[in-house]
Length: 160
Image: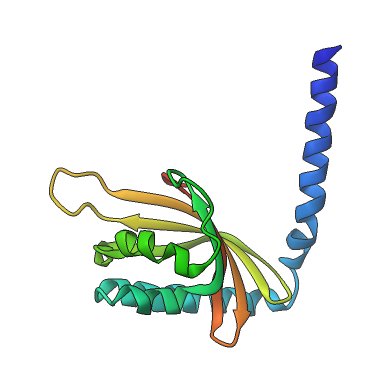
């Protein structure tokens, strides 16, 4: 009886998740998808260029994130509820950012002013014999006055 109940709960959860993402999935065929992809890629290109030249953390934050950013990820103790609260950790993440590169992992989903994308971040090892650092990131971008910038982020360590 308990196993049957658990099966029903799992099926219900799957149905709810699929129902929640289906509007975004159908948006993948919408005419605005190409524009969203171009906008997201433009943001990533700008951030990658800033990382390569070891730009100040504020310049990277301004290019990448909205002020109302919410972010959490593997190893973080909680949820950062705005960009200001995330600046300390961001400083640590980008202090040797010239070794890092952000890249879109297809597909992107878009609807209205929002775009959702899986991003792969690869940071080459700083020294011979050390391991590379890789992160899997889910970003929600908002298209606003400064183009597509991240308003939500969830990350974990590893590769796709």
